[in-house]
Amino acid sequence: SSGLGFASAKAIGLEGGALVINARESAGLQAARERLIAAGIAAESIIAVPGSIAQPELAAEVVEAALAEFGRLDAALISVGGPAAGTDASISDDQWREAFDTVFLGMRRVARTSALAMSAGGSIAFVLSSTVRSPLSGIATSNGLRPGLAMIAKEMANEFGSHNIRVNSLLPGRFDTERVRALDAQTGDAANSRRNAESSIPLGRYGEPDEFGTFVAFVLSAKASYLTGTAISLDGGSNQSL
Image 1 (cartoon, helix red, strand yellow):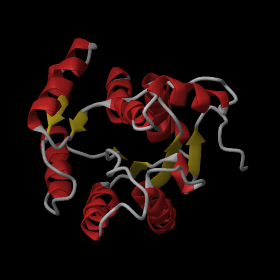
Image 2 (tube, one colour; image 1 turned 180 degrees about the vertical axis):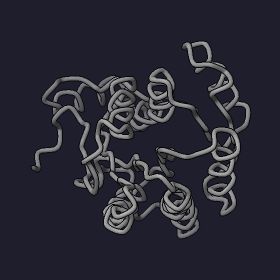
Image 3 (cartoon, one colour; image 1 turned 180 degrees about the horizontal axis):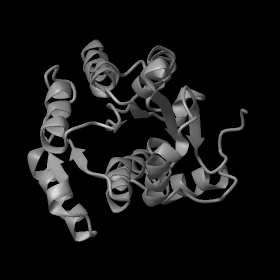
C-alpha cells in the first residue's frame, strides 16, 4: 500500500496490467487503491485483498481472487515491509519468530502458491534488500532472513523453469521511502544520516520509488522472458561487489 510495492503496482497498472493488491491494514489498502485509480488505472482492474502475509491462508486468498476476477495469474511481486529494527543483541526470540513468519515463510508461501497457479507460465519477483549481499547496521533480522529468501528464489527458478515460470530477486538499496526515512531518523539526525548515505552512493542520491516500479514492470513482463534465477541490485551503484 506504500513505498516500493505501491510504486510497482502503479507502474504495472499503467502498462495495462490487472492488479490484485494486498496490505495488512484494510484502510491503507483502500487508500492505495484510490491513489492508483487517481493515477489513471481503471477501477475495475484493481482488486484489494487485505490481510497479513504471516497468515497461512492469505496466499490462497490472493491467488484465488486473481483467478476468480481475471481468469489467470501471470505475475507476482512479493514485497513485505521491513521487520523490526535493532541489533542482534537487542532483538528478542519472539521478534525473530515474528519476522521469520512474515518475511520468510510468508513470502515463500505466496511465491509457491502463485507458481502452482501459473498454468501458462509466468514471472515471480521477490523484493528483498541490498542486505542479501552486505549487512546494514541496525537491522539484524533483515540481514539474517533476506539472503535465505534469495536462495529460495534461486531454488524456485530451477524448480519451475521447465514450466516457463521465471523467479528473480530484486535487491533495492536506499530509496526515498517511509521505511528508509525511518531508518535515517533512528540515528537521531535524519538529515545527516541521509547525507552520509548519499555520499557513499556513486549516483549521489537516493532512488525514487517510481524508478524501482518501472524496473519491476519490466522484470515481470514478457520483455524479460530469458531472465530468471538472478538477484538484481538496484542501488545506484552502492554495492561494490560484482
